Length: 555
Image (tube, rainbow, N blue to C red; front, side, top):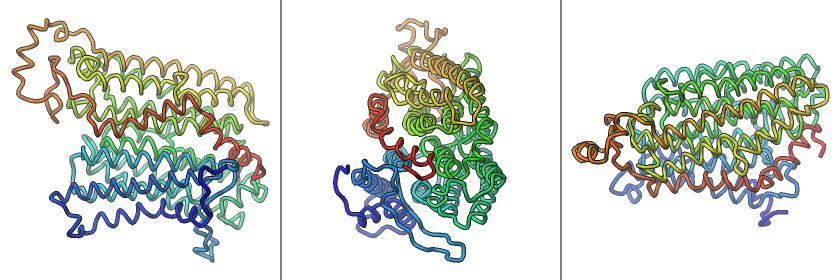
C-alpha cells in the first residue's frame, strides 16, 4: 500500500536528491550570494539558505515516505544502481527499505530543526557561511550512510561526517573545544581504519561489495574464520561511533564542548550510524561471526547501561559540580547500550527493539540537548549545583513551560509507558530473554536482568535532575522572603540569561519558551508521544525488513 502512487523513476530521483541536495547547498552557501538574495543582512541570508535547503530535503524525504510501498517494506525501493569503479565492482547503489527509511526521516527532521533554531540562535563563532556549509555536508554524509548499498560507498559516507563535526566542535564549541574535537576525530578515525580493513576483507573474499547481494548470500560465501575477523574489525569501528563501553570516552567531552545544534546532531543522528552498520552489514553478511561475538557484545552493552547510569548519578548528586550536558551525554552511553543488547540477541524481537530505541533516542535526546542549550543560554551555565542550588523557585517558578518540557523529556528518556522510550527497551529485554538459537540463554537472561536494573538507575538519575533543576533546592538564597529578594532582583543590571552572567541568587523570571524554540522542539515532543502511543507505525516498517535480513534475504 502506498499513500500516493509515485512512479519508480520519481522515487529514484527523490532519493538521489535527498542525498546530493545538501552537498550542493553546502557549495552554494560558500559562494557569494546573488544580488537579489543578499538582503540587508548577509549573515541572516546564508542562515535562511540553510533553512531552505534542509527544509527542501525534509519535504523530499516525506514525499519519499509517502510514496514508499508500505505493504512491502522488506523490499529495497527507490533503487539506483550505476557502475562507478568497474575494476573493483564498486557501484553507486542506493535504496531504502523499512530499516533505513525511519533513519532518513529522523536525519532530515533533526537537521531542519537545527537549521531553524540556528537562524534565530546562531552559536558564537566564525563565519555563518562556514557553519551552514558544515551542517549541510554533515547532513549529506549521514543521509548517504543510510541510503547507500555498497560497502565502500558506506565507508566513504561514514567518514564524510567526521570533518564537519570536528569543525563544529572546534570552532563553534565551548570550553575545552579543541581537545574535545581532537579526541572525537582520533577515536573515530582509528576505529574507521580497522573497519576499512574488515570491509576490504569481505569484498575480496566474496568478490563483491554489494550489500544486497552479500545479505542474500547470508555469509555462505565466507568461511567462519573470515566472518569472525570481519566482525571484529568492522564491529570495532562501528562500536566507537555508537559508542560502546569502553570506547565511549570521546562522547562526554564532545557533547560538553559542542554547540547546542552540534550536540543534537551528534546524539540524534551520528550515533545511529554505528548501530545501523551492525544491523545492515554484520547481522546479514557475517552471521556466524556475529554469533561468535554476540555474548561479548551483549556483555559490553549491559556494562555500558549500568556504567552510564552510575556516571549520571554521580554527576547529579549535590556538590559534584556536574555539567547537565555531560550528564545527558553519559545517558546516551546507557541508552545505546540497550540498542547494542537488542542487536546482540540476533532475534527479530531484539533487533526491532534496537531499531525502535534508535529512533526514540534520537527524538528524546535531541530534545533534551535543545532544552539544556536553552537553559545554559538563560543561566549562563549548565552546572547542576548552580542550576539547583542558587535558583530559588527554579524552572517551574521562573520559566514554567521550559521546566514542564524538560520534565517531559526526562520522563520520556527514563522509559515511561506511553512514550517512545518505553517500547525499544522493553522489546530489547524481551529479545534477551529468548536469544537466537546457538546463544546461551542463561547468559542472556543474566544480561536482561542487568539491563532491567539499568532502567531503574535511569529513572533514579532522571528524577533527581528534574527535582533539582525544575524544583530547585532549599538554600539560604531560596529561603529569603519575597521582600528581601525583590530589591536584589530590581538592582541586578545584567539579564540572567546573558552569556557569562554571574549565577542568579534571586528569583526573577527567566524568558520562557520563545516562538522559534517552540517551532524547533514541538515536533520532537509530538513524535515522542506518537511513537509511544502508536508503536505499530514504526514496527510495521522495520519488522518485515528485519525478518528478511535475519533469514538471509528470504522474506
